[in-house]
Length: 165
View 1 (cartoon, one colour):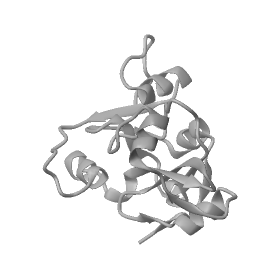
View 2: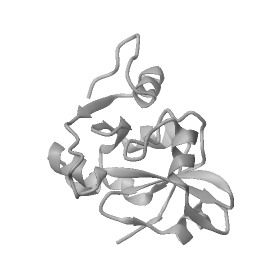
View 3: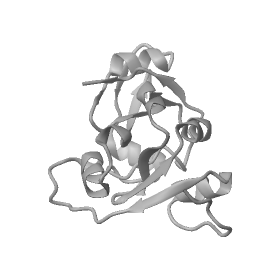
View 4: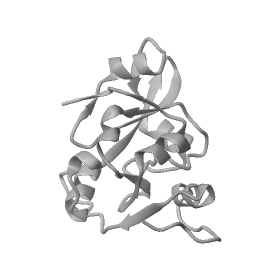
């Protein structure tokens, strides 16, 4: 992995990583709009990475507060577990248009990094199983690989068991 050089360019996620001086690797790939895999599974397949190491970013609402949930692309989000981890009572998926407005990213390219506004973030505990993980780099067809510790630190995340099969 390389450290970003001065004059960061690219998506807000890449700018945030460079500004923080975090070691990361950028993995661009050709997104296929006709793929039926879903964005994260498509990324894993195209990049040749175990799908369990690729995490999807989901925007949710916990008791009315927009909250970021990050889970493996091979799993589903457990809304009840998310609400508990976020210190709330009820969680639901956020409206896609509201998610795009709040993050500055499009659905399928929402990164947990560099969002327009910082939101409470919960990462699934399986993030600790790997030396590096992949998350969206801020657009469809762009993933970024970084150490779990750095992802936790940069997002201020709580780490909890929020994924289910």
